[in-house]
Every structure is written in structure tokens, then in C-alpha cells.
Image (tube, rainbow, N blue to C red):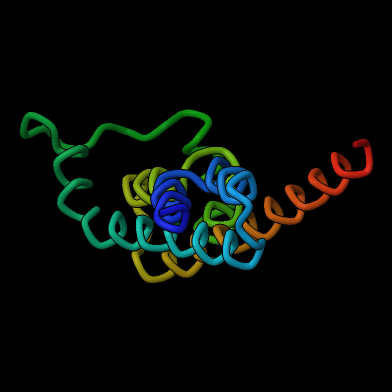
Length: 141
């Protein structure tokens, strides 16, 4: 049951899945695998189901898409798909980051590749930070 919980939480958010898995006493490689796989599955689902969603959101009420502007769009223009894929898991859930990138016009294949890289990067960083934190707590007690 704890395995399914960590996978399900990772499906939605890696920031909660790692501490959940470590708190449940799972070994860190298992936590890493379940968190990453849950997030990669949800990112893939959004990437392949996102075309219809993108069209519906950008063509609301039969209107053509409005001009894009704002801070997120500026980040998008500056760093593109590679930057977005590596950084968006830090600021939002990976499925949400994938959806936003699709709305901004990302091509599916490079987006999936860079989102996977970002998920693996941040999952690794979070597991390492969690292990360091647990080590500090153990030395205090």
C-alpha cells in the first residue's frame, strides 16, 4: 500500500511524494523510482491528451487566441522548451508545467524529453535533500 501511495502522490507532485515515501520508511531508491515514475506517467498523459485541451483553451467561444503576454510567457520566450522542462517542476507540478508549455505552443516530443529530464533532476535533488535532512535529525536525537 505505501508503494501505491508514493506513486499516486508522485503522479501529482514530486515535492510531496519524496517526503511521503521517506516518512513511510521506504528505501530511498524505491522512493526515487516511485516518485519519478508517477510523475513521468502523469506528464506523458498530459502531453498526449493536451492537444484537444490546448485547442479548447486557446479557442474559447470560437475566438482566435489572444496575444500572449505576462511573466510566464517571458520566461518561455527566454529559455524555451529546455529551460521550461528543467525548471518548471521546481515551481509547479510536472503535469501542470507540461500543460502550460503545450498552451504556449511547445512541440510534444522535445517537451516530453525535457520534462522527463527536469522530473529526474528534481526528484534526485529532493531525495538527496530528504536523506540529508533525515541524517541531521538522526544525529540530533
